[in-house]
Image (cartoon, rainbow, N blue to C red; front, side, top):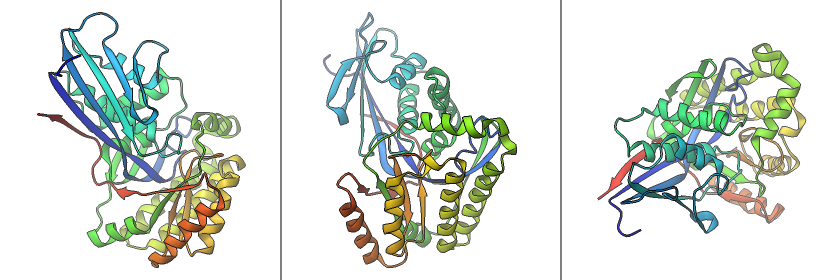
Length: 342
């Protein structure tokens, strides 16, 4: 294609520790969610080339999968297709979209939402006007829910757009207010040091798990006692962190995971239970099955003050099953970033 006339970069964080998850859905009606944006981030680069016409104007480079292809209907990830339909290349130009992340797909950490936010943010830079973080999040949610027909809550897109530690209050689906929690740097650093993200080696389709829970609880709607417990856990998580009480935050993570299991026993799978037992034995303060839960996916662990016990726990988890992996994370103060290379 020659030299690009413009190069736009973007990135967005993934999400962990989503206490109150499930209450950000259409069948919940209203909800409250506590979550934390972290790296590894999803990275997108859009290179723009002049003088292109016809149907083959979008090339996708999926770096993690070693695949480069011309984007046509049915040729690649439908999420990318939907995003390009919303904001395609400028007339007379072609684009190459490069996508990369160290976050494993299907880990229940909102990776697809982070991709949608980062991609829409980059494509938005190619058109007049700029969308706000909330507009980007809403557009990304519409991609997953409407264009792809997936069951999707709203929290992942909001965390990807805003980053940080969030108290999300959904007054009426899908409308929500995001309050970012401001905590002192030493508490931020201590929380970052104590958190672990454990990938269980298998991805899952969270939309399928949603369908199972909806079949069981959807008719109750926002009156469901199980959903009310989860809303309460989100508020308690916020209060614990603002008080600097990490043991209380850990207890809330445990209570939230138990409330998930009460919604449907399949939401806390066998792999998760095995890792939880190792975490308990190594003095972890809390554990949260990330996202919708189910077989595979990941957990957030909150460890005690002893850093050596955390490292020993990581070794013990790796020894349980060669598929299990502790993914290095950093708390992400920023959400969506978009900038141009000069």
